Length: 465
Image 1 (tube, rainbow, N blue to C red):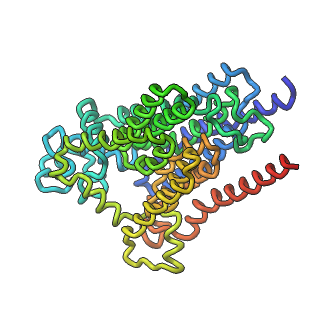
Image 2 (cartoon, rainbow, N blue to C red):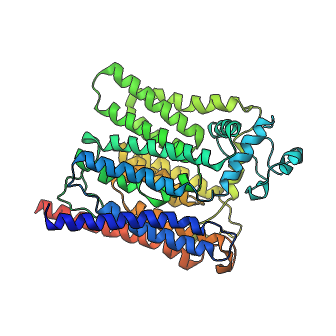
Image 3 (spheres, rainbow, N blue to C red):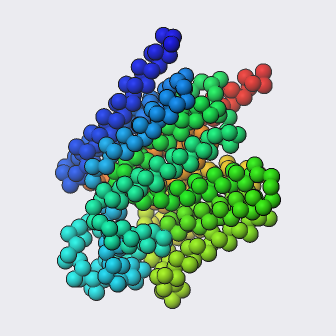
């Protein structure tokens, strides 16, 4: 092994150890009821992100594939294990509550947490005061509510939820590795890697997938904060994998089965969270006349809705109301409001309409490349969303990793600054983004996108020359 490779391994090892240690250190700063703890949490998380970039960017692709695999999976599991002791996010208590009231015979789409009928249950639920938006009925799709009901039958321990969500995340990584295998991965060099390296070879797929698998936000969101979005991401990415297999398949009957499998996977994902529904128009272009199978994507959530009384009970009404009034940490609309389109009441209904139109337009414009269109659709969803919680960014990180749109990975790290909202002393108004906070979150990913665009154009000119 040459001196350069030896130095690269040392640098990789130091960065990897630093990421693991810093991620484990977050356990010392996760009690945000204490003054300035959110500031320390964010500072350590940002440092962890820097170590992550150094580790993923220096992955030792010169090692044998079997050794790469061992390192890759050991780090995947190790990082998630050190995140398990972290305090769950406040959404977790909502999951527990809605599971418990179902066990008692109540419908979460009918009874909000502060419903007087639930007074007796509130007295026996110690974390009831931690439930957010207690005046809203359930806003999650029926697949998620069934999951909460099932988990509540087993245990109240946050560890059970975290293990399930982290397990789904690890399964997502396995699907992502399959997307990188063969001719399905794009040929652009990874962020921080040499453009002359084997960007799409099977030997480097672990290096490519590490950008998602080792991402601190991904790890914290599922194994640490116990957000259930990984259960949506897994079937969504599985559906995309089926679409790539459909694209390369030549036998007609097998293409029908792959189309049906992709449609079912998207239906399961939509049943857990509605976001994958934005990708259905892209699926139409990917499947052609076999897009008729996408009816399954609608049937699955519809059938699950019947279990909760739909259409007699308007189970989607609470989500509609919630989407119209909730506002926090948006990437784009604050700039419009402070320049040309004031919105003193902070209402979102017109923004949601614009978002839907933008998704349709992007899907139509990029009909010839459904893979790229899906990334753009999820990207514009985050950019135009009136609310951007950090774990929302995990929705597109597998696709961003696959398509090598690494500015989104930068955003995933700067979004840790969002958790400064829990330290209200540093804000003039609680839960209001100050300009300096927006610069921290938005500035680095925008600069990265510009830099990568300029670099890619320069490489194109060199190839032409």
